[in-house]
Amino acid sequence: MSVDPAGWDALRLSLLVGVVATLIALPLAIWVAWLLARRDFWGKGALNAAVHLPLVLPPVVTGYLLLIAFGRTGPAGRFLESTFGLVLAFRWTGAVLAAVVMGFPLMVRAIRLAIEAVDPKIEDAARTLGAPGHAVFRTVTLPLILPGILAGGVMGFAKAIGEFGATITFVANIPGETQTLPSAIYALLQVPGGEDAAITLVLWACALAFGAVALSEWLARRVAKRIAGT
Image (cartoon, rainbow, N blue to C red):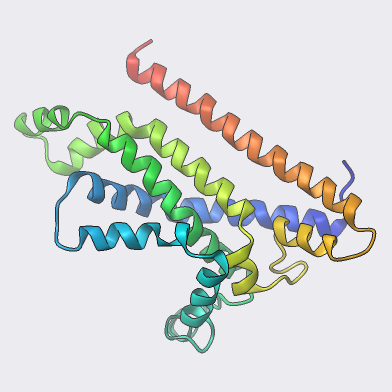
């Protein structure tokens, strides 16, 4: 499958955005999933709704809200630029933020289901033996939910490399700068004769998604066997 230089740039950028977004979102997703699964607190319903809001909002709306908040004239955007020199709008870093926001609910859901599947009595038994809360989570809960974490990470990664609506709204479609794989496919479909190149990129996108899912399943089975002691 031959890919032109612009296509390779889009492919590399999508992989970069997917990896960085997953690494940023995963630790926070684990913490939020644990809060929603194991703690009762005021505002829990609101937090749950906020986490899952990007799943039900049109992606273009999410991208526009990001532009309002994190654009150079937005409150968060001005703060980040003046304090850290970090510009998000119309930069690849903004594509990472859009991917984090869109993939985060999928990560939280997968990890939360894994945590809820763990019998709380196992964690309580560890606490009665004198283990502090962080040690219980690290040595008991975390190994048991690793398959869920892997599943959430892969789902977030797949969503990141496939995200289009929020990304193109927030960072546009600048070749070599913000043009990800979906944006490149969209651009090719707007050009007469671009269908062949678009099909090649579509096949690459399918291969990446299939490979990510297959890797997740293989790692999950290995982790499950290790936990079971087989």
